[in-house]
Length: 189
Image (tube, rainbow, N blue to C red; front, side):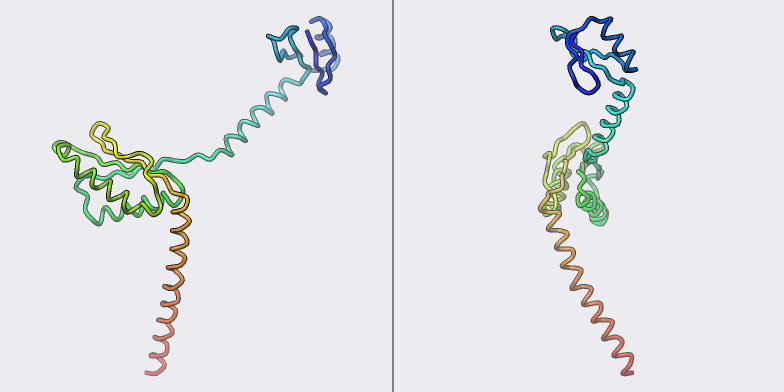
């Protein structure tokens, strides 16, 4: 077998007994790296340390992965206007946070006959969210649920934060001006 030491130096082609003797002298493990090669390749290494470093590397890679979560908003075909607005605010927050959202319309009983109502609700959600989201999956009926998946649009989230800051500045100035006017009227009285 071909033997490689712990400093990546090739020690040449040796017998198994000679390789094991060298491994015992150095206090290392003899690990077969390429068994299908001719002759097989073995390496001298501290196998416990190697396994530890491999596991540690995998954990670091998993930690660095960007995992996008799929949030879900459930609506009914008979959703009231205020309830729709409340649900839409939550949906907007999820999308601005960079998470995907699955919007589900749940049908019960005879509501299945009027699937177009559910489709109109999903179209309304998509129209209201088109500034900061894109449709990743078109409305699809699965059992008694009609769902659509929205993903945040990169340009939309940047535009919405710019618009929010632009709207906040004039409102803050108007409030400050309003406080100043109320102080003046109080001092004149």
